[in-house]
Image 1 (tube, helix red, strand yellow):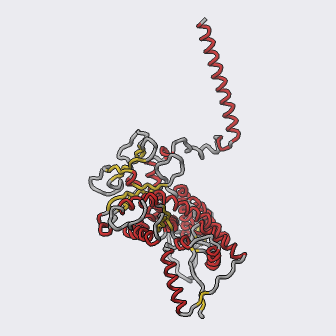
Image 2 (cartoon, rainbow, N blue to C red):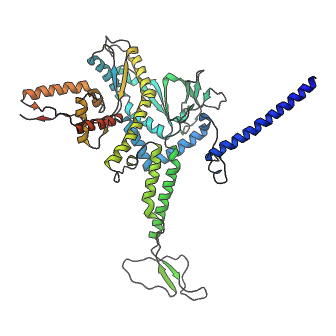
Image 3 (cartoon, rainbow, N blue to C red):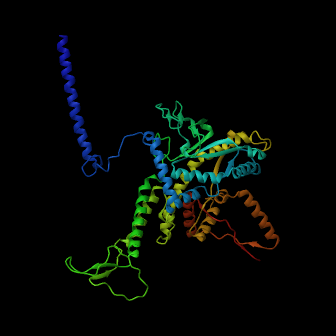
Length: 505
């Protein structure tokens, strides 16, 4: 009976396969029926023709990234709007540069201040703020920025020789394609999926060098900072932040040229002579495309059988301003810029709308600063501390091990659109202990201890001269509301000047 059971088993398996196929077809129809975007029709098939299921790294192949970089750079170099947006992003993010704020258990303020000042001076020597701004601009246009940590022997007079050399994303590339799943165009992954090494070319692939080659070196992950714009899980190389807007930039430039061409055409043709006679009629002989000079304020006659007309600009130039605004709004949205910042035009904005736009923008800046601290600044500081420990006298004695230290980075703040309201709100916030001097002074890259010492010296001098400080007014409901608004602005990095009201006795 074995043959019978085999035949029966095959029939049962075939029937089960057919049942599964029918169920799958029914389920597929149900799913397609629920989601319009999952259906392919004659109308939308061209729109979705480029949709694919590639992984994040496969979709950003070396050739695709090269094209996107080159096109984004060309647009940046020739479009004043994009050039300004990128510079604004870098300026608002980095400003004059970050300042270190250390927290050391058992350390005195003066001792901690010595270390903070040493880090600041080192950052000035290596031009850290400018390099961070360049990294942000490269991340926005190229999609990624690469910094190689190295020993700069020119810094030996001041102790720590750590420096960071920036290289373009083009130089982070494998010399030959690889089918190794742990190798991703210049990156070598370890067993846990972490980047272990970077292959960086010695020369830029686009450099005009005789005898150019793909020669390069492997760098340990600890010697490289790789800051890139990631939009998908599992992504290891970056795509430019401005890439989604490249088509819109192209549309805007073409539309602008079309409007200019229409205006120039109407202006270049002062008048056109056309015959008023039928084909069999007789008119004065004129050569086709013949041109005639026109003098200002003259009176003239027209050849027999001809009539003069002027060109009219039929192009809808009256809608150009609105079209440009809509396009710039869409472009700016892709990089989290409000229109008033992208276009540098707040003529149609109100106080409330500006405040709302800046809230979203400054929160985005705060997130970007946090990312920059984690990827670039923290590794730099850790390497600096390792080298500083080997320089006699650079780190004061009596401090606990570096492993017990913690730190934050402070950045430039933003000017408030209504300084009077912000000043009142700050005074209330300080009295109600909802902010700190360290936080407020850090927004202007100032050390609060030094400022307090300086202020105490000034107050003592004023008291000696008979100048009396006015008592602080009592907080009102309006002050409390302003303080709440100030707290919201603090989340966005709003800057506030600190002043004290005095009176002459």
